[in-house]
Image 1 (cartoon, rainbow, N blue to C red):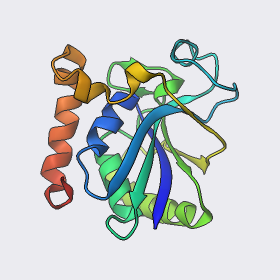
Image 2: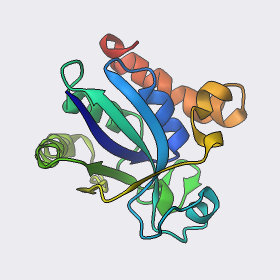
Image 3: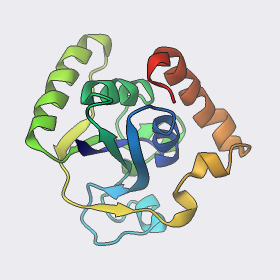
Length: 174
């Protein structure tokens, strides 16, 4: 059965690129969620005018990959202990957030995070809530890494995240 979850862990280009390497993922779309403005733009989100986070909508086949495995990859690909930032990306749009689409996901997410807490000494600041609305990002933000691998941001920020996930989850790679 195909399921959906929305994940935000800093710049959506990073999370999108990581999940494009994972088996069982049917679709990944960069976008915005968790805010209070209808149809926000990238510029509005970057100016922190909308309350939205940069996120990715992940469609996955639950017979091929578990939500727990997706969460493992997600928490490996970003720092859930820093509020409103990932590395040099600073602002509420870069917050750590998980937006679930069905109640069973919320239960699994909360149990998973409870087991992680011992590994994160500063505490996990990841926001967990029901998805209200997902807005797809503009076309230049879709498949950003695949289309811009030689850009400095891709080489210095995204590549290390991909390498870390490839090392930690070799059995789940495409």
